Length: 499
Image (cartoon, rainbow, N blue to C red):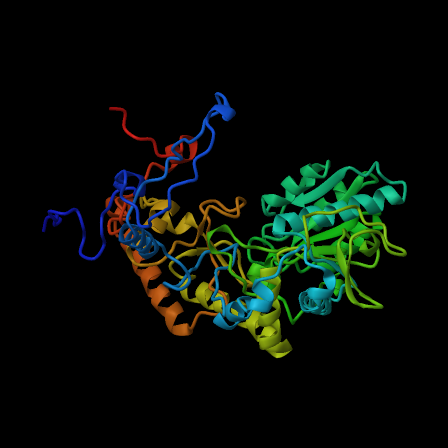
């Protein structure tokens, strides 16, 4: 049967429309504005008085319909299962959203007198308390605005500590091959050189290779645990001992803390500093690139170098300290004002509503769900490493060998089935990676539906349907793009046609 082509270009309730700039008609506006007060043009000389800003003139219904249609084309956690690995996309409780919108929290200004925002300071202080309690660390810098910002903060504290001890010559950072791309970038931004550490066949850091690269010029090791292959670094205590024995510090990337929160205190693992992605571990929104927050916990050795500002209990209540305090040697500031306050409110609401038992269950369920995916798909996909995983299941493209279907083709076919694709081609140490993170918020029924689709697509690929896969997605508003050209020559700005 040939594909049906409608007269309008619409596909049922999926409306085809122009760009909003192309829909504008001069003088068509949804509001009446008063005439501006006359002013002396001669006094302005040759300066431009008024210029078009390039925005289209539209009626109110046009604007409402346009953005409503755009929202219907979007896929999000409120639409369906989001198996994207490496950056958790899980349900954000509406209770936390409601609390963050309370006037006494949402309507504050960072320049208000501190005596008028005691409640806000208490939110920051209380969240800091629980982050320290959950990690076992004595100090936390609350101001970093995202995970990578937290990495930078932790490394700057390490740099300040070394310089304070007269060891500023330590300019080398060790980073495993499977690290997040922000790790070496953060190290470079702090003025360090980066030395890569290989992994063993089981996907974990090669301890002997790490020991061989330790030396008097090493400032720190940056390690993710659980790592980006979804595996717990089983030799982490030995790794910490080796790093400390060489006079270096141990930085842990906390992006995957959601797999162990409530079960492991990172202080017990010998870690000196770790950022916490509140949008991953404590369920604050992160879709669309933000907002994020990356509070960074610090060991006793690094606590004196924590950046300002920080909340302290003073004689007149809670105070936000902007300068040095007794015994402190802050390396400076990392952000204007006091951090991502709206995210703090959501994270604290989540922590308090979950309780210690709820947080422990959440991390346990995240691990359970990932291992369920791995077990149910392991006979049709190719698991990258043997044994159980942590919060995400990692497969590679060996199951697609000789089918003519690539990882990208497989992911595009998932879109036609109503699923956002899993993470593709990451971590880079695994060829043709397919990384799935189900999170703790998905039910067994949801996972079973996803599993059946993935199994069906795998069978279809092995049955010789390569051309069908390469044509996917076929049911989306737009078909597959030339992604290489889109990345190299992006069209970022609409320009009117030249008449």
